[in-house]
Length: 187
Image 1 (spheres, rainbow, N blue to C red):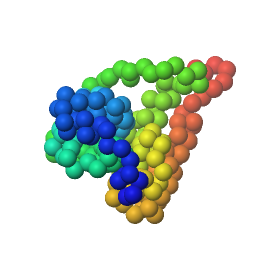
Image 2 (image 1 turned 45 degrees about the vertical axis):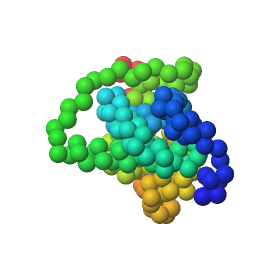
Image 3 (image 1 turned 90 degrees about the horizontal axis):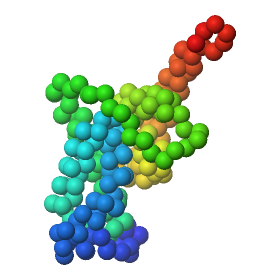
Image 4 (image 1 turned 60 degrees about the vertical axis):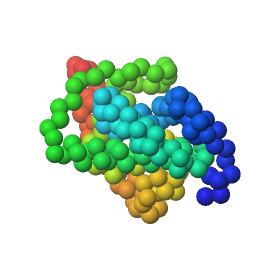
């Protein structure tokens, strides 16, 4: 971890010296933490709860963070673990998500909101291990080796999990194509 040791520790040192500077860490990483949790659960409230748990755990462990680069790695690992822990707790509770409106982001002319929502639901239907690997690979744009390190999994397990998840998603997308009917007389 030489890269971690040699990278600056500005955010962490500021937060250790001034408790109000902890907010700077939150501001700097909130979109990454929230988006991982939201894409894992598809629920704003749960994503906010998980994010709060991550920040609380960070506050308790701030002195153990070696650098700002280590901070990012630590937060990514913490949010994935909190997501998995939360799903374990949900197994023992009845949970009914409320319908929520997806918050709009920057307009992309090729972006199809209905397709994006359908794909998000298909990813959300994957088993939790597959789901977090897909989220870390395609949303967080992590390399397979980084995912293996973040999830504390062997690299080949990450590769296999990702391959199986993509195969399942392909099957489900093919099912969608079969449901779409284009042509005269049918809408």
